[in-house]
Amino acid sequence: MKILVLNCGSSSLKYQLMDMENEQVLAKGNFERIGSENSFGTHKVNGEKYVIEKYVKNHDEAIAIVLEQLMHADYGVISSLEEINGVGHRLVHGGEKFSESVIINDEVVEKIKECIPLAPLHNPAGISGIEACKKAMPNVKMVGVFDTAFHQTMPKEHYLYPIPYEYYEKYGVRKYGFHGSSHRFVSQRISEIMGRKDLKVINCHLGQGASLCAIENGKSIETSMGLTPVAGIAMGTRCGDLDPSVVTYIMEKEGLTPKEMDNILNKKSGLLGMSGISADNRDILAKVAEGDERAEYAMNSYAYIIAQYVAKYAAALKGADVITFTGGVGERGPDEREAICEYLGFMGVELDKEANKVRAEEKEISTPNSKVKVWIVPTDEELMIARDTVNLIK
Image (cartoon, helix red, strand yellow):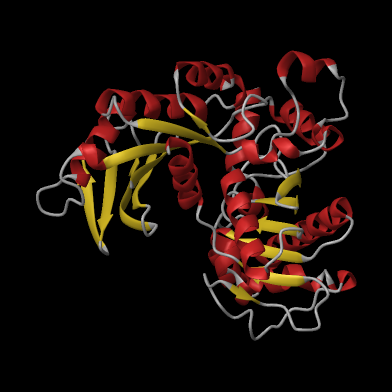
């Protein structure tokens, strides 16, 4: 069974075609700057990369080109679209309407549209991807997998904000959380590794976007992102949590509009804002090695904030069995992992510094004496989406 996984951003498209008999990726790629004259795509098959330099004005055209690439005369991996048995769509926001993945039909699309105010850039792109696939492959079943769905198991006292209740009732203002497919994948994988379903897991998905999740018995009970992905820990360019009055104070001082302030919080803050160097941890660590004080402050703050969240989630779980690291930084950042774990000795965390010197490898990196185990578990959100698609269309 072959499943096409699509992730439509506001001006981007990522995709993978997977053979689910052996969960092998047959081809994958992406389109960037959709709608711009300098749009381009990349397509990868068997380790070979093909660049597509072409003006693509919308997701319809991008998906049409993707399907052409999959059937290409020289490097195609299927001979016809009939070989695609299902399409799994990553959808950012399902609000309170979706607590699990669903077969996409007209009613589901309408509910996704109702959630557009909560994700005005991403949900319309997701709908565009659905409509484009419906045109190109009208008889193929599609499944929607929502970033927010995994966190719908949070207790009400964990997701409500301490503001007038009417804003929750009128506008759905509450914590939703994101990275659900990643947190769910890691939760299931660490349960397999440790041979237990009753685990208390604190998963650290660390990358340009980053979030932590407290998981008990395979269910999310708390997560760091909120109404939007800007909340929680400091990220590459997002600020994470701060005093709300900071926002209004800067807006008044600088004469900024809400849109301008939102741009600062999402694209000019986090590690980039603190360091003044880059949103990439590697660039900042290189400056730390050169003795740059601001770079050192940024990385120290980053580790401190994440460690605070780990401790907070240990309280939410009333204990912790394992801390997992995943995502681009979580999987490939030994320095960051060590800096975070140095704060957690009071919890009985004992890091094996030698074992920690690995990148993108599934491995336990705590000592045998560590009361809380620490693991690196590479995530695979696309595989999670493909599995859900197979299960539902069967």
